[in-house]
Length: 342
Image (cartoon, rainbow, N blue to C red; front, top):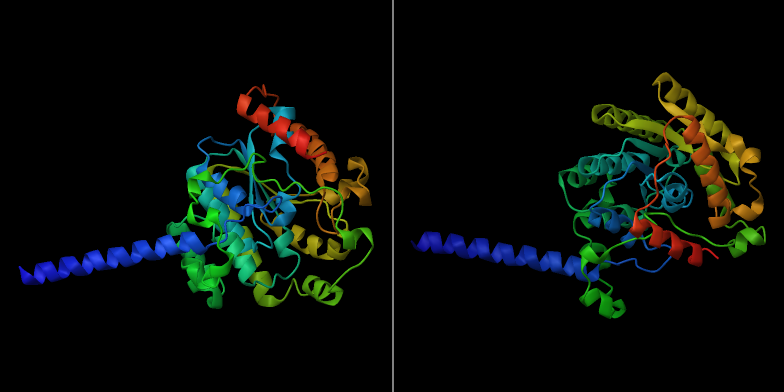
């Protein structure tokens, strides 16, 4: 009996410790609620959504600054969501696709190849961005064990390790936050207005490192990991009966990436995967420098131009069909979007 009580006390103690760690993780973790980069709402909000989606978009910031689910819905009645994070490695994108297909049933998914055409230097901010708001699951644990850099694995499991120094930054929202309140009316899209100061004034900071990251895209191990990630995404789509498109969304500095894109395109052709480089339709979309927030991302003006072209393109592909856009909640979101974009 004494042994049983001792065992029971040990179990209760361990449970209390685990509960305490979970609560401290929730307390210290950055909630990322400040717009337009409110990734807590955008990633966490997806996992709070009860409704299903006809289409989904995956990738890095190039994805969430390009695809506008509300514009797509208004013009087609097709419901969609953008699930991405800043500088998201392609192998992590594969894990995001896997998690989304586990809980949702899209008929088509789009994956931007940006992360494969330059070498990402993962730091804690990149890892926090894709790891913090992804709910714990078998898939997330596999992602951490197999794909997160060794030095960041511990903080991916216990964000408290990364955020323990936030004592003096804690706000009311930290103490009273409920993860179920994460919600994004833009359905994952990041609305950027105008242009960044540096881009407007033609200032390019850290240019040497940026150019080096582009020329280093085909380093043996890095390229190998990305090609493996393409294979994983293709396999996931096939096993789930989902139509898959790899895409490259418009960028202002396209010429720097053109050779790299061609390399990836050839590999995707060998895999019989569909790839569309929307930079080849620059003139048809009628994009100018004014349509970009910076060299890499569309602003809302450019995103609307791109999405209208994208919608027509997908209609011709037979992917988007005309449906009634009569969901009142989505209609209200469109009204808010129309106000906020101006």
